[in-house]
Image (tube, rainbow, N blue to C red; front, side, top):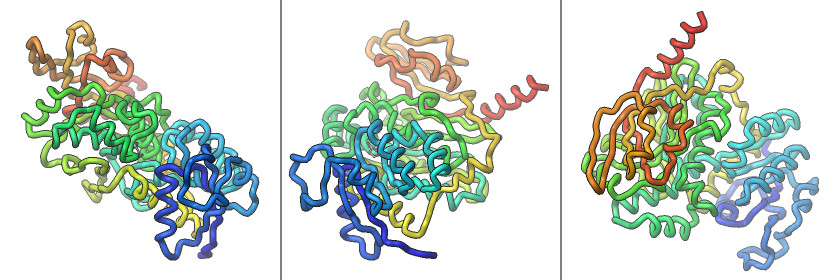
Length: 411
Ligand code: HSE
């Protein structure tokens, strides 16, 4: 195996860019040097010599000496153009931009294959936790049936602070922003979009499924109130923003939703900016991975790990995608949900399969009922800001049942 010294051109020197520089400078034995860093604001005071910086992308993209483009900017649209051009020019690319990757997965696969150059993005999912390469390599031969977890540090920070320290939502969000965990547009975090992008990327490496983010339900934490948190506490549970990806037969369902997590679930002990991943597989049964999911050095360390992997010629082979050609995305999964509402009229009652519990008072009303994921995805009432929805449980067997129904219909 040949190890080369890589010359890096970095786009962005914000939270993750500075983290990368920090971990790179403290890690001995990495065969990589920073050649240039392209930034947007030349007037900002920087911790590095001015000679490193440029505002001209072509100083990186058109420099034949630079082998690897490291894309760490905030603007996902601009990032898309940088990554695309770099791949077309035959440069290897490392990115931590989950929105860009999730929204363009199919094209990025095509570009890597056409230009025979790799794109690595370990830092885009769960910060410091090695999840992508792990799913890609270690789980190659294991039969994964479920991937779930806490994939967003900011919302976990907010929920932890609300529950453990009684902080109010806005103050906790401000803290997450000040610590550099939150996206520039915090709706991406609190609305569950960021977690959903990470889920879409994970589904490809876990199950070989390509799904567009707009087809995946994301319910965020922005409508949660103290009443919901108290309900969880009274039932000896926590509310966490959880991503769910489940495979039954060839059908995969996926969504992001606030979820009641009970005391025996490892996710209940994942606090603040930490993330946690639960895998279920046929032979290993349940496994749990935890670590910091956001922040400068933790994400920088995942980016550095990709750079290190490039020095020995690593690339994703997307094995599951090539193996599992029959997998399909399904929204036919029955969920048991808690729905708190302020006005009865805002709830679409006929969307429920059944309602098992109902509580109504002047200040606080909720129901517990079962509903198909499809109904939540299609109906706008579920995202109404006067309604709060929390998952109680995924009702087993329903994806399979839908599959069987389809098979019978086809016969
Ligand atoms: N805003 C993201 C989070 C950053 O809070 O998890 C890490 O991807």
